[in-house]
Image 1: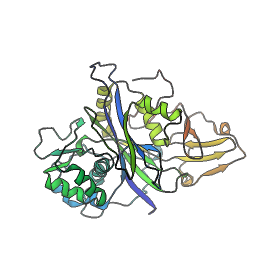
Image 2: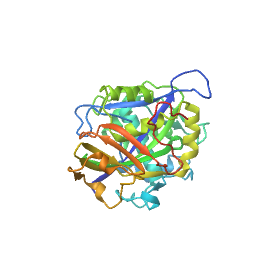
Image 3: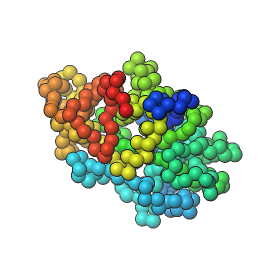
Image 4: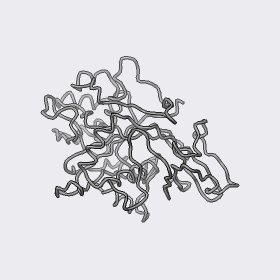
Amino acid sequence: MSFWREASSVMLLTKSSNIKNVYWDPFKILCIKRSEINSYLPNYTVFPGGAAEKSDSSPEWTDIIPDYANPNLNLNIIGYSGSPAIKFVSDNEPGSIPKYLSLRVTAIRETFEESGILLCKKMNCSYPETCATVHHLDIDSIDRWRKLVQKNASNFINLCNENNCYPDVGALHLWSNWLTSPLLKTKFDTKFFLAFIESPVNASPDGVETSQITWNTPDEMLSRFVSGEEKLVTPQYYELLRLKQFTSFSKLTNFACTRSVEGCEQILPMVIATKDGYLTLLPGDGKFNNSGKYLEIQYELDKHMQDFDSNVMHRLHHTEEYLPKKIIIKNYTPKCRHVLPTTLSNCKI
């Protein structure tokens, strides 16, 4: 399956209020609009991230990242029904750093390229390696470095060496793993990480891949999607609905830090085209199967969506452009101690 590419994304969250309240402590998430010149998802709003580059797994990182052997930085991916995750991408080359590190480096590098936010720490920094929050490092000539890294990903190694810093991999918490839908031609195996920053950082689009950057609450982002102001594909829509379950920044921080050691389930969207619309079946759904059919759209044009109803449902209705229309969850329990996306406005944690 060499046509698949490996990628990482950061769901970067910050407090949206200075009010200290254990039960109501709202947060915002960094959202990036992809420019119209992108061949992949033009004008869609996503979280910062992108494809892994060879330099992200360079053995040079073992001399840069102090705690590169930290056992808490897992990348445990569970496959369908408890089976091993399906391998869509190749292993890192012999001698390279392990993927639990390299994919976090990818996420941090891509966030810097797309937004200008540098999630790095100075050497001998007083913050512990497993700190719950991450910080933006404002270095000299940061705009020049951003252009250099955009031009060549290996310059991220040079940035760290010359500025005596390193990617804050310990502050990225594994959250989810999404595989590209059959509706999209370019295939990615993307690991999503959660990171928390105490206050919003002034971010700027690069003017090439990204055209707009904003900090929004999940409610704001979902409202703009419903009104047609924003375009979201299923992973972003699903994860925003999952974040809506939390009303407290501190509770979400604690949950993500403790839950991430459990790993996450590999999410393989299975798309069925029916007489009255498209269905995306997700693992755990009573009609989902692991027969390999998820690699192609299944055409059942003589049937209606309700013909695929099941006692257990974990699915979405969506358009041909993969814009989600409705999420349906019934009798489904997520794996790895995760939470479900909300389908009701009063469902909160």
